[in-house]
Image (cartoon, rainbow, N blue to C red):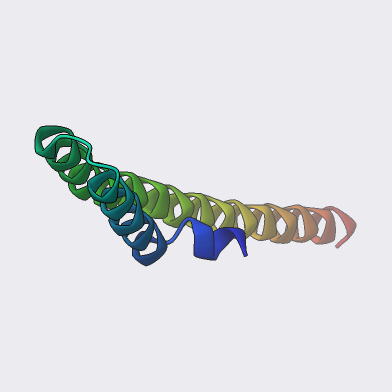
Length: 84
C-alpha cells in the first residue's frame, strides 16, 4: 500500500486534486500555478532519486552476498588445503 502512495502516478493525481480544490476555493491563480509548477518539478525528481536509491541498495546487497559466498568458498578451500 505504501508503494502505491509513493508512486508518481498517485502523487500527480493528488497534485491535480489539490490544484482543483485551490481553484474551487478561489485561491489566486499565481498560487495555484506555483503549487502546480513545484509539484510537476519536484515529484518526478524525488521519485527518481528514491527509485535509484532502492536500485543501488539492491545492487549493494547482491554484491555483498556474492562477496560473502566467495569468502566462504576461499575459507573452505583453505581448510581443505590444510587438511590435505
